[in-house]
Picture 1 (cartoon, one colour):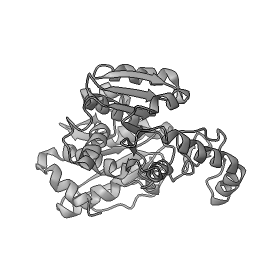
Picture 2 (cartoon, one colour; picture 1 turned 135 degrees about the horizontal axis):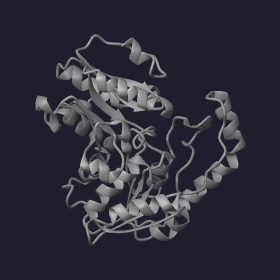
Picture 3 (cartoon, one colour; picture 1 turned 180 degrees about the vertical axis):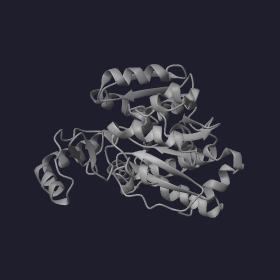
Picture 4 (cartoon, helix red, strand yellow; picture 1 turned 90 degrees about the vertical axis):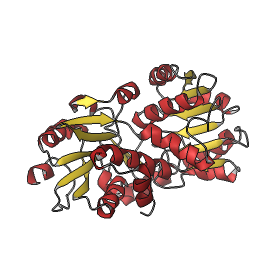
Amino acid sequence: MKPLSSLVNNTLDVQPTDSYCGIFGETPSRGARSPVLWNACFDALNISSYFYPFDVRAAGLEKLVVYLKDDKRFLGGAVAVPHKEAIIPFLDHVEEEAKLIGAVNLIYRKDGLLYGANTDGIGAVASVAECFGKDIDVFARDQKVTLMGTGGAAKACAVYFAKCVGKKGHITIIGRDENKAKLLSDKCSVFSNARFGTFDFLEEDLSDSDFLVNCTVIGYETHVQVGETYFYNEPFTPLWSIPESGFDSDTLQSRKEWLTKNIAAIRSNYSGSFSMLSRLKPTSVVMDVVYQPEKTLLLNVAGMLGLNTISGKKMNLLQAAYGLKKAFADRGISLNEITNIMKKV
């Protein structure tokens, strides 16, 4: 395990197991749920394996994957932001659905090779369907979805929601980069009526939307690092403008100073978010894929307005359950068995 430790940026609490798994991300050691969920299943099902967080920057991703390919004790795991797209070229094979989506959130070993798959989309729509007590195929049929984001999770969720609403339904992709929004809209158009726009188009689109889905990192409680700059997204929703400048030190003091400097922007975002959400129909559903915190500002504001809200925590659990089932398919573990264990965590 010593060579592996040299390829990640966090300390690994090495366990004496027959095999191991892990989550690839910039800082999953700071609170990612996958290690907790998978390890709970390993304990309950008497599987001699352990799930580690792999903190790895983009520059070190390929070396880590190459090492894990050669180590047959590595059985797979999860992929988090920002590696869901970048990791694809380093894998041996990618499932067709993940190719269509253009992102993977799951890696598993099959016949000695590392495969990439995506369970984000099925986890998202299954979590919504479960909340309404309906089947995945009917809960959103012929309805309209407004989805914010164009990254890895957004791609998976968009394709699956497009499948669910069907040819008589509609999906709108909202992104900061219009070209990326168009590309994702084109993928969705295979399954439903699809259009796209920047956030300037959002206000117009919300008035007849049945589902508003946030697939951005806005609202996430932990610092997000982009290059050498840190951003703190928890005090905001993606519905209104946010500060473009961040801070250069991962410390509480730097965050406090940044918050103080941006009080006006925080107030503006809060007020603007109320205004935007008030355009939704009373029956509309607001979903956030962010699960830390469980109740983001977006969901809190939507709840104050009496709208139905769905936390990303359920999606996170279900995508992990689908992933573990696929990674350990040879053991014949049922999805219900896995989810029942994970729900106790």
